[in-house]
Structure formats: structure tokens, C-alpha cells
Amino acid sequence: MTKVCIFGAGAIGGYIAACLSKTNVELSLIARGPHKEAIEKKGLTFIKDEKTENLKLTVTDDPKTLEIQDYIFISVKAHSISNIVESLSSIIDEQTSIISTVNGLPWWYFYKANTGTNLDDSFLESVDPAGKIWKTIKPQHAIGCVVYPACEIIEPGVIKHNEGEKFSLGEPDGKRSERLKKIADLLIAGGLKVPQKKNLRNEIWIKLWGNCSFNPVSALTNKTLDQIGNDKELINLVRKLMKECQLVGEKIGIKFNVFIDDRINGAISIMNHKPSTTQDLNAGKPLEIDPIIGSIIEIANKLNVQVPNLKEINSQLKVKAENFGLYQRSEIIDKLTS
Image (tube, one colour):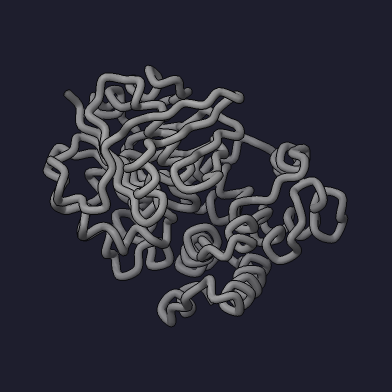
């Protein structure tokens, strides 16, 4: 039986767990604190379309209690991955595939990327400080993932699905591998929509396009997407940020098959929604600044692309997050993204 572990059974990790629990896999969760205790005592409660399920699942806070896994979903915040990779070594062997369900550019991004630049087969400091993830997990284990659903933790042990069922997957080299097909089929059997992409990187950047612009603007103003859309000055700033992001992406071979205004209109049509960065700020949780904005600036600086608006908003957001104790500054990353 296929062994699947979900490291970080929060909103998205819990949703994946609820779906895979319907399939023929040996499923285990790694969680901590009150969330882990609640799942242990009462099971994982999952709410979708006004239906509530209670799932009795194996949960632990110690990976060493588990066997070697076939697939591991890493569903913690991007900036937290480097803190947990060493604890994963006990459940990984040469055949283990690792799927990170994170915002921003993933740690494996330039593995087999073939961009024709000196960034190929190297790590980004803003995503993977000192290359700790790259060196510990090794990028050949990675399967790429772009996450679209929105879920939330209502209380410890209780997860509510709000919208979306799509998880796009793809190999770093774009091939249709057997391991990719196997996990996609399992997720589909669990009720998800899982397209297998030949060039997942294009999709990563289309999502990043919105994250690097709307997320910081919302976090700095505490406005919803539709409120930003009704503010000419803010929407003009969003457009400038997206144009800079596109310049950087195109420099490494990304094709933006959507017009900027179409991407903007899609976002501002969503009513009363604040992006994840604003939600984290209001909840007092550490912010994902470097993987979402810093990574673009790091690439821009290495390839001599001018991104003044991204640099300015990155600096402003760092200061605000620092003031709330939600961002820990790194001298190395500051140097690479200034």
C-alpha cells in the first residue's frame, strides 16, 4: 500500500488528508500543539459544502515514529521548511517524492529549469537560506505543485473548505513520470482536480503574479481585493508590480498567457477577500515575504532587471512585519534583495 505523509496538517494539509483518507493509502499526519492534540483525541473534522466529516487519522509530532514514506506533502509556510527538513530524513529514501504546497517560488525551482542563465541548478537564498533544503532533501525528490483551494482552521482539529479543488502538479523537468501519475490519480480518486503540467513553472508565475502585487498592497492597507480594485492609486501600483514581475519571469523563459488587466480583473471580482499575507498579519502569524517578493527581486538583481516598485514595497512590508514581530530579518537576504 502507498504510504503518504502530510507534514503540517493545517488548512491545506488537512484538506489533502481528508481527500486521501477516501483512497487506498496508508496515511499519516505530522502536526504539533493544540491541533495535533485535537486530532488525536477527536479526529480531524472536515467541513465542505455544509457537510461535516470526522476522520480518525494517524497523527504524530515525531517523524521517527513513522516508516519510510512514498510521498510526503510539506504543508507548512515556505519560510518554515528549512526548519523541518532535518526531521524528515528518517522517513525519506531514494524513492520518496516530496510535494511542497507553498506560496511563492518553490525551493527546487531552478532544478532542471533550463533557463539558459547561471541560475540553473542552483538555489535561491530568499527561498532556501544557505541551500539547506536543497542539500538536505535534494531536488530530485521534488514534484511541483500549485495550490488553488482556500481553506481555514476554524479551531484546533477543525478545517473548513471555502473554495477550489484544483492542485496542479508537474515534474521539474516537465516529464510525465510514473510517480507523478500515481499521486495525481490518488488525489483525483479523493475528489480533487489534478492537472499534470508539462511546464508547471508558467503556472507558478501566474499565481506569483497576483501574490507579489495584491498580497503586499493588501497587507499594507488592510484592504480587500475588491476595495483595492476601487482605488485608482492602489490598482495602478498593483499594475506596476505585476509588470516588473513579468519582466523577471520572461527573462527566465516564462510565458504569461494572460493579460495583466485580465489577471487584475479576476482578482478584484472576488468580494470581501483579503489575501493570505493580510490574514497572517491580522492573526499575528509570521509573513511569507521572501519567497513571494524577495525571490523575484533576488532573480532580478542577478539578471540585471530593474524592479524599483517591488523593492520599495518589499522594504515597506518588512518594516511593518518587523514592527509586529512577524518577520526576522536576514542580512544576506537583505543584501540580495536591496
